Image: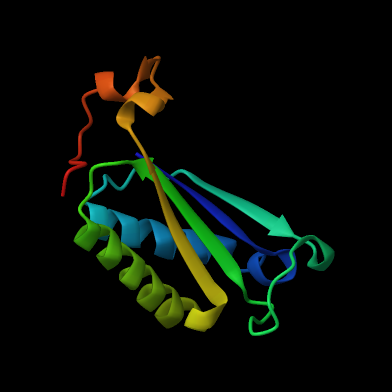
Length: 129
């Protein structure tokens, strides 16, 4: 299970929200062998005075946080990050300097869904890859 939070300026992301979600989702499916029906995305669209960022970023500046159960190898996570940079740049013409990605992991026992903790649930995809 992975949950994605996407933060950026409303003026930039409003028009491309669906397309960005599709690119992020397909990249996660491909990189982590996730089922295609497991999409948990939330957009945080900010007004210009609500999102402060360095001068070397444009108004396209976007932060992507991916929260997931721990277990993936460092190489798998690095591949996911690299693929996100490439695919978002290719599909949406984002400058890679305007994109920041953070993977946040926690033990399965810290997750709760389907009425149980994550370490009690049999998933239909691999976590340790």
